[in-house]
Figure 1 (cartoon, rainbow, N blue to C red):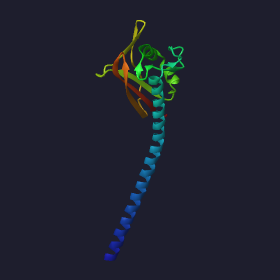
Figure 2 (figure 1 turned 60 degrees about the horizontal axis):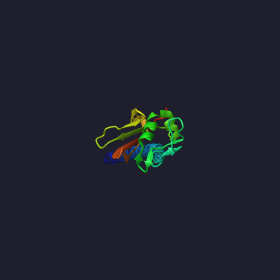
Figure 3 (figure 1 turned 90 degrees about the vertical axis):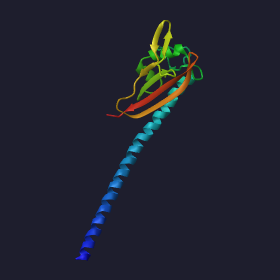
Figure 4 (figure 1 turned 90 degrees about the horizontal axis):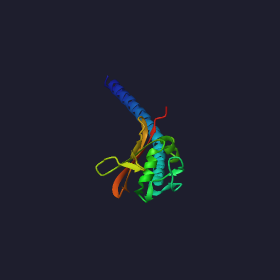
Length: 171
């Protein structure tokens, strides 16, 4: 009788280990699958965000005196990391879809915000018109969100420029 009881315990233990390893293998493969799905998308989004930030903050744009109708590549730079108010106004007034297209961000949602040290959103004025330096959106059901903050000079003062790139879950 004792020998039979030991055999049952050994069999139970063997089944428990088999179930454990099966669940562990399933978890590992699912985790790896999710990792490889999100990681390349996140790396690609970071690349696109870096490129857009470079164009905006290191370049005056193309053509040099661009506006919302003549823009090829928008740029804000009066000098490196110095934001020009006229260019900022033109950027804020651009059609959102056109802005994303010219920055090469068509498959993403893009948010732009320029704030002072207290978090107050700045405005841009040109020829008597004023607009806020905050526009765009973050995808509500995003599976990739890449934020970036840069300290820039605007109107002679240090400001924080926040750019956020997001990609919605495919339907």
